[in-house]
Image 1 (cartoon, rainbow, N blue to C red):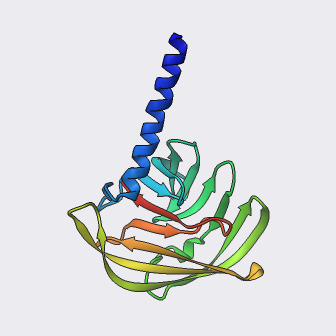
Image 2: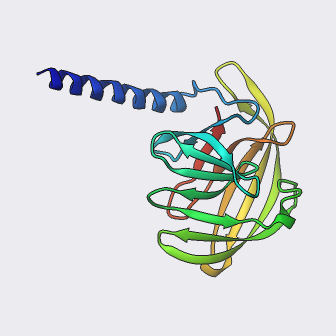
Amino acid sequence: MNFLIKFILLILISSCQNFEKFNLFNENKSKISKIPTDTLIVNNGSEVDEYKFMSLDKKNNLIWKSENYGDILVTFNGKVIEKYSNNMDFMSEIFDKDKGNFYKNGNSYIGSIKYYYPNSGPLDFTSSFTLEGNRLLKLDAENSLKTNLIKERVYIQSIKREFTNYYWLNESGAVIKSKQTFNLLEKPYVIFYK
């Protein structure tokens, strides 16, 4: 009997935590940070997950680990360039020569992306950035932040597929929110700093 009560309490507590996370994001009660922090909130449309900063890799990319699932994200200047989990993983390569003015209006570069499930092998892509203008980004119920909205168009020639990513940059040029496609078989992810 004691075990049954503990089990029921555990289920109730864990379901309340998941419900709370879902409501925080969807009811816009969560606060988006004005500057990058050590916590990313990632929403794939059906789940909200929190990623904590772990370390830098050899190329000074940021490595993040999921609090709930143990997934790993690697970011360069706010752009997710790698994802490791149980499925839909990928890795993209941006060459050092293209990293200088990355989000500059009119900038374009050529890179390579590899999907692991299914294994695609390396696929070359072209990417170009366009400044969409200034936007007010709602931080919480009372506060907004002036941002520059950058649109990235990515085209993978060999499979004739295109997708669009969006990045909201603060006044110092740091990405504080983004909407990115990790895998062509999934919906875009919304990412912001907590």
